[in-house]
Length: 316
Ligand code: HEM
Image (cartoon, rainbow, N blue to C red; front, side, top):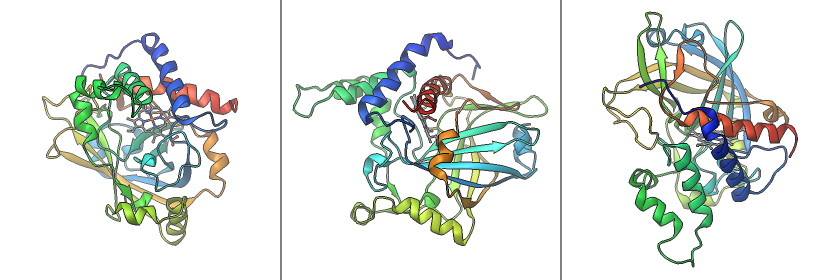
């Protein structure tokens, strides 16, 4: 749980490669995100539990009600991807907390516990191997070779990736490890989990296939117009030997969990399509009391997200 990560210059070239792989995979859609392109923006609040401030001195965890802006999204860089397309899973949930003293801090999570790559180089090799694999090509394919050399990725890919019945009945995981620092200077390695108060509900593939292309977006707007949509934000705390630097390795479920508070969403933005262009979520938007760990992905993600944001703002 050292706080060192690779210097950004080491990963700048990999970040460019990653951005190009997204473009190659999903096509160029000016004005949209390279990943998680289809999204909807909601507003609400976050209220912390008393237990939260025992773990971190971060201002939004001190118990004061703070505004949040949340963006739910489908996976891939395809802005029109149908909500029931298996490639649109895992869905995303990004939360921006407006801090009491000004400024913002983010959590960027998706619907799978764990991530297929643990390092920037592995991510680029993993994605590249998928794009260079042809069903009729020679065996082993580049993807098969990658999986043979990366058993953690192979194991991760065997975990289910179900279709949610609603953005509000889906659990989200930030996957990367961060360090919480409390007022006494005590440090804990944590991973965020966001659990729907309505319970998890998924759809069988046949039921999902019968839905319209925007059924989740429509369902969320209808649901939130009737009643607030709530999630429990919690952290899983690393055990002494749990790996903090490798998001392919999920920590055992029996590790201590602490509920940090409740995200309560009260409205969906009628101008989501425009609003989301100017929202910049980033897992390294931290604040005093939350630090990067030795997990190399957040800093790398920040580099790739910056490329995506720059393209979006220039409508490239
Ligand atoms: C090396 C790994 C990763 C790369 C290269 C990557 C890349 C990207 C890019 C380019 C964007 C668009 C950013 C923007 O234009 O604002 C994005 C958005 C997003 N990513 Fe990742 N990502 C990675 C890992 C992850 C992980 C581990 C998660 C979940 C835990 C995740 C969840 C999301 C979500 C939810 C969004 C949408 C954020 C929003 O609503 O603005 N990504 N990602």
